[in-house]
Length: 348
Image (cartoon, rainbow, N blue to C red; front, side, top):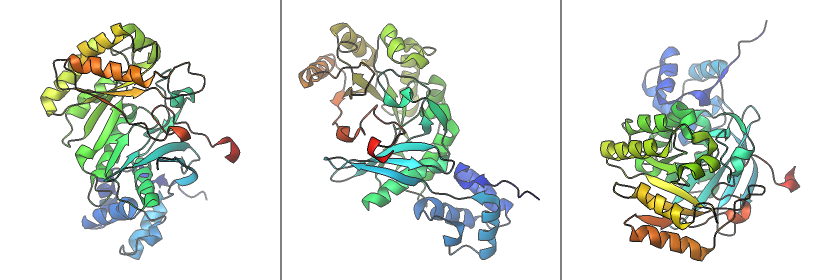
């Protein structure tokens, strides 16, 4: 007789874990204990959850699988950044990045294996889309990077592989597990979701009770340019995106970041910069300029540092709050737009 197929415990969000505990006849406080073992202490098996009754552990193992991601490649940058290639339970692979600073550790985690958005300057989209990640698979990326550094993770950003709002429910469940004191205990304002501008997701995100942070990959405020470099968001025009973002700030009181990968000769021209200033001016926004990172085969050229400074100065003179992202991990292809799902050639 074939054994019933078990589901992956990583597919459960906080409320689902509570329901699982109840369905197995356990008191409600066991849900906090289970969450802590899974995403706080991050143990590799149910048997390691030593303060849970033996019968409960056996019931969990009979119904659910538990397999932590395996780090099959870790690359270390000269600046201290580390890039991780994880193999998940079904063999799918994703990357995440640990970025240390004096007073914090930020983890850039993936929400999908691959990406379907097809942005022309980004390595992830060139590899195509494989599948959505479970909430627990997102949290484990963050937790295991923190364990590798031997530090508490202070910030986590859904800026790795994938479009978070195309996996909305799992992403929100993952953020809530990270935010939970029994999980990683990362403050809500230190948890950021970066979207290509999926408007239905932004509208939902504005109504969530937690004070999670929003970033939007804008990359051009000229519709024709944006359509060309970000082809899968054509259905959500810039005029509508700007209105939804203004509504977001009015409703939440929080300032979204507009991420802008500066591509030489494409979106750094005077007309493009003027359009960006017009898009960002007059409401509560912040532009983060990112000199585009080299990705083989994209044709996207990196601007000079001087040109990036000129773009920043033009925006500031127009009254737009602007910063330039400090580049981290580019020597190991761990910077914005460089994540793939592949081993280094020497490890193949």
